Length: 152
Image (cartoon, one colour):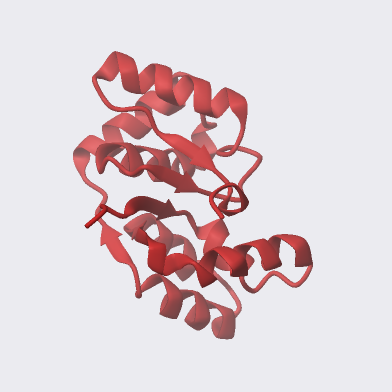
């Protein structure tokens, strides 16, 4: 039996299911979710913390329901240390350390693909390049950072 691809979803992917302001992204995210059975899907405690901060109670419940259906990865000291390295190397701004944690947790758990719609800090060439430079120098594997559209 072929091993399933390990995929980590940041909060932007789950919330895109309900983002009617961006119908194209919503549609692409739904197409990914239609194929989710093909993947071993993970989220982390960071996702739940971000969902907890959602002001719309109805939306918060929907996001939680989806997130709880996936494997949950913990935040540990090693992930915090690696996230700090990303911040020190100007991968992610200090004020957005949760984004660095998504990346660190994915790296440390040997996730094949981190999926995100966060083009400001996560899904961009500079981030991919420096994350993998930091990972290589720290003895960690490369991490592929992409959008859900690139995996379907």
